[in-house]
View 1 (spheres, rainbow over the protein chains, first blue to last red):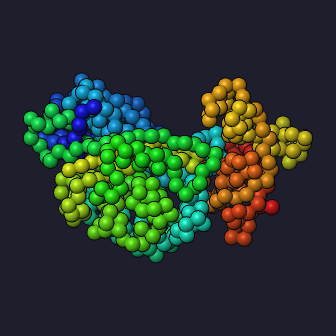
View 2: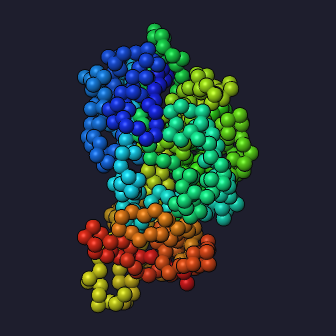
Length: 389
Length: 139
């Protein structure tokens, strides 16, 4: 397999916008092309990450091709990929495969979603509620909120995790988002505000869950051969990108998720790096409590110690291992299709030294972890990409 | 629920609940080769990958709450809030289930608490017809 680099990134504004899918995608992809110093014909293959906006009245089929035709991305291999919350990560991985295999030299991965033009009830009933197994879960009323409710209660029992610790994750990520111009939510919040917000799923509160957002993110990848003869922004090397699916056990511990543990182990083995090497990480914090689980599965602390890691401040900007410097799904927002690429773009900015007020000083190794789908107390698509300067 | 009324009830998934000796029980699937227990019917074991060994196994009616939560946001057709749990059954598997007859929650719900299976309305379908399945209630 050949080495692959990220050479261009671009994000639309995340949040509630009047832009349609095409406008969001054009914005992100055009920014990425300019960042990479490329023009549309330089792209040899494209993958679009797209979740379920088709159920909310947007393009249902071949949405990527439709979204980018007006800016002249055409006559290339072009596919849509779906992987729940991690569609963008799936697009990125497919693009990497195309280059690592030697088939192509320049690839576009992008993701997009339009979610704010309908009511939150519509998002739930036409879209979000169907991410679980109908036969055993959705038809019995279980939603992703419920899974997290069960996990949080068990972790409180097993490890003494507190809701204040969970709230602190939301406060931290909002603070990071206040420095990120693309973020959906930029106004800082307090632990009390989080703890007093609507009890979505006891004991978890509304501000501990990510919003539904509009947005698009694009990432351009290139082979080593290509970057040797090309001048653009600073290329960032991909050390590894891995994907796994769930175990779907009938005997979960509910203290973490098997796929998260498996994917971290594989990513570290394949990259030859370990948790101590990571300077900055983007993790899937659709629920603030999940970020605490990820600290443990990624080895940033020991099992059961994630809550105390939040208390220590080590995962905030300025700490030992800043997590979700872009604001995370909680505050940057979560346009499903875009999130995987948005996480990668944040890591690329950090390793280039171009993250502005969010910059982690001296960041040399960054990790992006994204999770798609919940089934039987586990994830269904679990991605990690590790990047080095 | 009366046995005579059974024909009028729509069960959410007929493979998961059956009436045995006049009583509803949850049905698991056990592989006679490796002993693995799961819920949904299948031809091949998901653990040892051998075909032809899957047998129906009536599951214990009593189990223990491994964790619980109360979900206040629900899909159309469900009556919220929905108390729910991950139930530890003596056969060695844990299952997700809604809870019933468990108010006040603070008093009746606790990790390790004993629960018993019953059959109740889960939701109303798009035609407004009630759909039933298993639930657990504190003992």
